[in-house]
Length: 62
Image 1 (cartoon, rainbow, N blue to C red):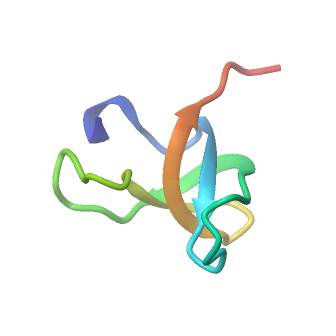
Image 2 (cartoon, rainbow, N blue to C red; image 1 turned 45 degrees about the vertical axis):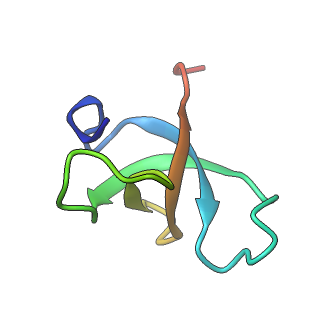
């Protein structure tokens, strides 16, 4: 999955600060933080908004 992600890509993440695992935030990837190609809970990224979380889906540009 990590190989499908790159900085500048629009994604939806579940922020690390959300302990309920229900909140989803859309944003543009600034940095990929997970070093392995896969992770059972999603690849960890930092968005341009500085929000950190695990990728739940890749969005099409609007």
